[in-house]
Image (tube, rainbow, N blue to C red; front, side, top):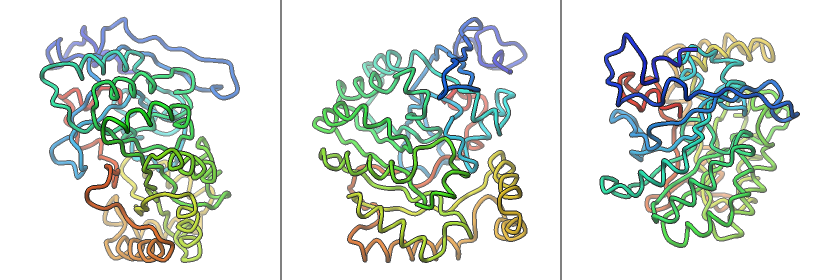
Length: 348
């Protein structure tokens, strides 16, 4: 594992010691012999920075992120962040699902950085790389401290998650929403239980996620649903789109924003291997559809967006609108982040 290029004692790199992310002796690896964590190794680190700047070339509608974890036990086969594990010489397949990096000092570090005179109180997005409410959060409990710091500094923020563990922090979210802008997005790309079990095996079911949306909205927190990903030929049939939008509307979500599956390097290889195992008849169709790169053709994306928006209007909800709490329309590309900057290797 290439920890040495992230530490003060790293050699052969042009970065100064003060740009290092943690000390050479600061990595502690642990395993827990409990059913929910069996087969997972946690690498605990003490980060030097927790607020990360989004690269200027990014399409994201925010400039700053906080990510207390790297790697994700949700094990979504399409996850764009898989490539980031290769920067540590970790496997982007099973390694991404089972080698989880934890910034154990994230809450205290965030509180200090928010209190700095240099911090201008700008919007902070969370869950933009890996899910901050994945299973590890149940043990490490980093988010209560993070939310408490954001609340105490009245700093606006948004969260994108598939994790129903967010309900544990409901009181903190309500308190924060009373003093600053809080945007919550829950990701539900489809409601097909058979597809969910194979493509998102470590996540709560779509039904449970929509129950979380319902609970959050009942407590006065505005929640949008990122309908992502819409998976070509597996969740894009008109009847499937209708069932998903209908369920989202019934949950009380304020908006629904569709996002078609994209397959960047790292994720593409893992997804195509999964596709060959579970749906081999679709491999050639995917090779043609994604022949030009990571994204499906514009005509396909426009068709899905139009269908979902029409259904949303029919069921009384719509896409995110200007002025609403921040949404997460598209995850950032790790390849956009320069290797020489902390944003590349901050173990987000």
